[in-house]
Amino acid sequence: MSALDWSVLIASLVAILTFSLRRSRGDQSVHAYVSAGKQMRWWVIGLSIMATQASAITFIGTTSQGYTDGMRFVQFYFGLPIAMVLIAAFAAPAFHRSGVQTAYEYLERRFDAKTRRLASGVFLVQRGLGVGLAVYAPAVALSVILGIPEAPTILITVVVVATYTVLGGIRAVMWADAVQMGVMFAGIAVAFCFAWTGLPDSVSFRDALALAGTVGKLEAVDTTFDWNSRYTLWSGLIGATFLSLAYFGTDQSQVQRYLTAKSLYHSRISLLFNAMLKVPLQAFILLTGVLVFAFFLYEPPPLLFHPAERARLEQTHAEELRQVDARFEQAFQERRGSADRFVASGGAPTERDAFATANQRLQGVRAEAIALAEEESGPGTYNDTNYVFLTFVLGYLPKGLIGLIMAGVFAAAMSTISSELNSLATSTIVDHYARYVRPHAGERGTRRALRWATLGWAAYAAIFASFGGRLGSLIEAVNFVGSLFYGPMLGVFAVAFLFKRVTANGAFWGTAFGLVAVWLTKLVFPGLAFLWLNPLGCLATILAALFISAPSGGAGVARSDAMPDGRI
Image (tube, rainbow, N blue to C red):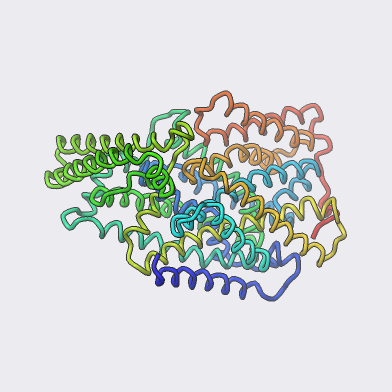
């Protein structure tokens, strides 16, 4: 990047951090640190909820997913509006009435302490893995920009984000989220416009979409029913609805957002705000990736998008790489010529088939290069999906705007990482430390513990992020990890909200059964699309909880509304 780009990037990040820390000044109590004094308005909460999910994984991973796989991934979000309405109707009122500080504290109110510990423990493990992936995404960007290995960039990212999260608490995090969403919107819009305007004058927007559609990039809805297909209409409407219900309705990183609301009204409006905007936003981000694909029909794409792997092959397989490069250049020219003829003919069937064949031939040559990259590490170990969008931004956007796009990447990253670190620290201290270890630590001791917990989870995230490159597409990896846990988490909250006769033992062992069922199913049926693990885990947990509770006839399910010792 140029000096101008670095100036834009640094100035943007400093402005965001300064603004968020200024907004968090004032009340320094533990209550303010974890709940913002319950003074946040709906639009700040709504943007924070969106920013927490729309991380750098969304910025980098979803655009790159659009490039490689087209619009199919938008089906993943079809269940989100349904989930938001249900959460606004049932979960948000229950949490607000109870006055809890974490979602898992509610489970102790309804059942018992062991159920709270189990649910909180599952959250800590699952969200800890998720924040590691969130750290890896901006580390990829820094690695490409600076030309250095990913490990130092992971450390840089964690140190920067952990610093302001430790200092400002949830209020600083949420105000930063609100501003960061604006920067992210601007970055995606700029990338979209330049991918469009970078097409040849003879190629219209409609032509670009027609070319992309010829090779399946615009197939947004797949109505076939296939258990092993990750993205279909049915997995989106059923599997993704369960996943969204679990993520936004039981995950502390999201529940904590709407527990900061001034009232139930502000909480509900923030959820409905996301219900309306999330699907169009994700479709726009995927479409940006599709336009980048159309752009690279006329500009030569890299043979390998991962620059470090390319450099390594130049040292270890120079002659083979030179030959593959020559074939790739020839295949690119053939594909470009086919694209020109397709546009000139108005999309004639013969030219459509010729273009599809030329694109397939180019992908075949690229597969040869990937095979070279995998000779030492083994088949399936190379994946450069996460580098596609960064290659476009750094290689083709003008000076200054590259800095803005990178600011969007890091703004999106910081919003998710800071939110997740804060929620992990909150659950650690509220659900465990202040409940069992030091229930009478006092304000000063508890606030110190929150800060140390934040730093501890930051270190954990950095360690797990070092494995991020082995997980393929980031946007898929983060949702796969969540799907291993979310179904049972949704199940235990469902029985808490809806089934009064379920006992504490039923809830605890039902959750444990659901977790085992999900993991065994994935082991026995490895090809099963991960979205289906969410309804499976939820239903298994509910049925097991009802079965275990049946002999007691619901005896002993009533719980005191008194706050357990250790509340902070």
